Structures are given as C-alpha cells and as structure tokens.
Length: 172
Image (cartoon, rainbow, N blue to C red):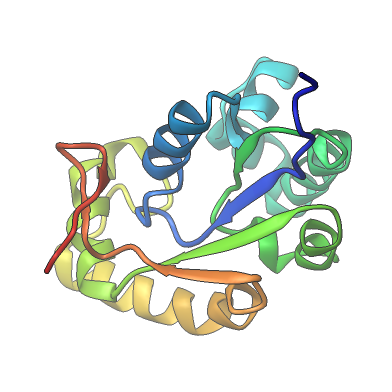
C-alpha cells in the first residue's frame, strides 16, 4: 500500500492559542511530523527569535520567516505551527492557503492572557507587562491580526484546550 500524500496543515493564531500543543497532538494522532516555524528558524540561524529581533529588527526577522516559509511550503504529510505574526506579513497567508490547509486557532482575549501569563518570561514582547497591560496589548494586537487569521480555510475555537491533557476537551 502506498501512503496517501497530504498537503501540509498550517496552524495559525495568536501566541497562546495552542498552535504547538494542538499541532503536536494532531501530528502524533496522524503519525506525521510536527514542525514549528520559529524552531526551524532558530536551528537554521543558530540564534533565538528574540536575538534575531534584537540584532536585526522585526523587518529583517519577517524576511527570514518568509524565506523559511517558502522553503517548507512544498512539504507534505506534516503539521506546521507558524509564528503569531507569520500570516500578517508579505503574502504569507495567501501562500499557505495555496499550498496547504490553514487552520486558525481562535481564542478569546481572556483565554490568551491566562495562557500567555504562564509562559510570559519566555516571550520577550510581553515579558514585563502587568496583567492589565497584557490585556490591552493582546486586544490591540488581535484587532490588527485577526483580518489575516480569518482568511484561514478553517477556524477552530481553541478556548477549551486543556493544557494539562494536551488535547481539546469535549465541553458537552
């Protein structure tokens, strides 16, 4: 039997939406590789995303991100978690829609803030913000980014993600 070829599945959404958690879970269930775009960039450049931002600025990082997305766009049989900003620059969203399946993991601001606080020290862009500042930041950022996220082929409500059990819970 020949294994069926499957277009890549791109998971998009704001930081804390569960792209990595859900991506790993789906990849395990489907027995296919899970790829994290940010991790691939870090491995290729031997620098953290925050180092690249600090040394070269956001516009250079977005070029690097775009180049890596181009490199992996023809991959098959894999789940790819993108950075929160990936769909919002260049024609990245159109490209992902053209070559694969895109899924927007949509969450409320409240859920995102709760999750981001758990890993706040690992996220330089929000590291020193109070809860109130974080709520304002996430709300404003979502207003900018959601028009891109909503171009996804599928939208999954990811508020019910159980981070301890690593899969979406059934809330019936």
